[in-house]
Image (cartoon, rainbow, N blue to C red; front, side, top):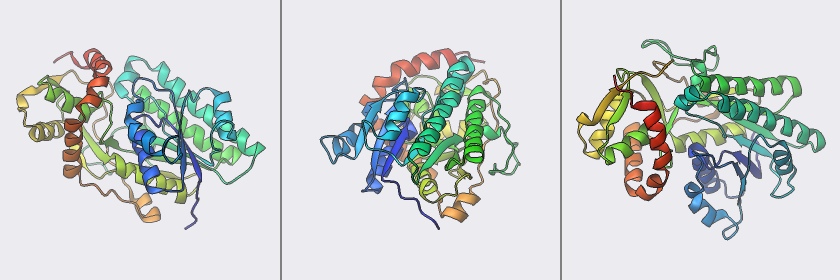
Length: 357
């Protein structure tokens, strides 16, 4: 198996939930790697999520971590980073910067097109120019979502990498468009890029508008837990550290131009998940409130991870029950972190969830 060995990795969106956990994981597991984190610090980006990383690996640590506040839409900035003008010159990009919340995309689709589509295009163009000017071994890893595949019925086979794209939300449409741009740059310009599509992530440092941290933080305050429709929408859950390991495996050993599904093989209806969280928190089911269903709400996601398992030897390590318990424990012991971001999350929740059926 051919292995690519980057010395410096540029991570976009590295202060977000998946991004911060990925940055932490690669620095802990790849002792010779330097990471440059480019993040605009919009509402879901939080440098506090990387305080330990900054202390251990920043300028007062071993010097392997560099944070740059900036926008992936800023072509000049991205070009400068790729050329190594102000930070070490990267030989790989892990592109995680994205607007990622379906409900927000329904409320305001345009920012999703700006960030997810135009932002990805900016990165691709910057990479093409950089590799033309200074050719070198390079990889571009584009992190996408299972939502581009649409919705499954209760007995349908899981999504595989050849499942047709069938987007049902502005968010998934914007991600599918960025996927297709990456594919086009591989085919047209020979850009050494790869695409991953993951199922729902969970774990530490997740912004409290997403399902699991929303339910945990509301339950801890004895507030109603909004559940869409009948609560029987099914999701496949992936622990964020397992995702980080999979991303690294694809980056260094994946085949250029290939799509890899990454899933946790842990399907569960939303209502059952909420009840499990209430049990772990010692809270009553009476906190559950059924609210009007979301427009275009996909009924079921499930991922076939046969390709990454067979070709790259990856499979999820974290048992879902253990991962969920560890996540609850993290939010219980990091109350200061999530209380600081709750004002934004609760304004969003008020706009999205409070229309009860």
